[in-house]
Amino acid sequence: MRVFGVSLEMAGSDAMGSPLGRLLHWNIITAAQADAGYDFAQTIRAYLAASGGQRPSQGRAGFLPAQGSSNGQGMPVKIQDKARAYMEALHEVDRLDPTSPSATSIVWDVCISENDRMRSRELGLLRSGLNAICRIQHRGIVSSPRLNAHPGEVESLRQKGFAPN
Image 1 (cartoon, one colour):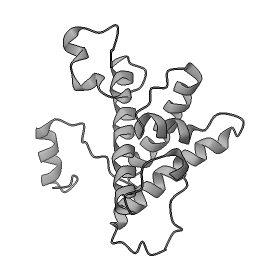
Image 2: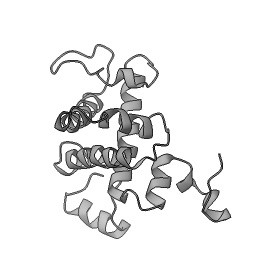
Image 3: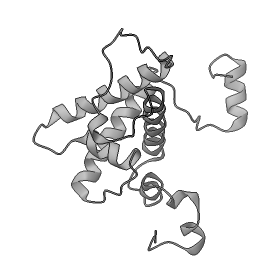
Image 4: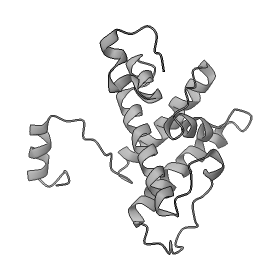
């Protein structure tokens, strides 16, 4: 894929290899939103892999089993809970304006399917969806896969019992 408007070095970097990376590079989304999008993609892909290797698609956006049901396939409860929390947060964004395109669908397309969505209305919904995922992460319901702290700070937090080992 060609990426215009960047240097040769930047075009060859990992930052330009995904829609989230490009949006972050162009300052359309924040680093926290990009991290949330990457974690959403990783979580949903892990969920789908554990639930029988289903291919990711927008039609699978309502796939989550009811709370308290047995997953039957040894799926880690943490992945199931995290996926459920993310999808519920996205559905809340969708309910804010039922006449608007689905934020769930847009976040799914950009993060899971890695389709570029560059229209301003869709970018606003993408940011709203990623913000909803960020709020879930910051409430402590799920932990972010990346600690955006200096390695020395992370070690200090671990010693105090505030960061995972």
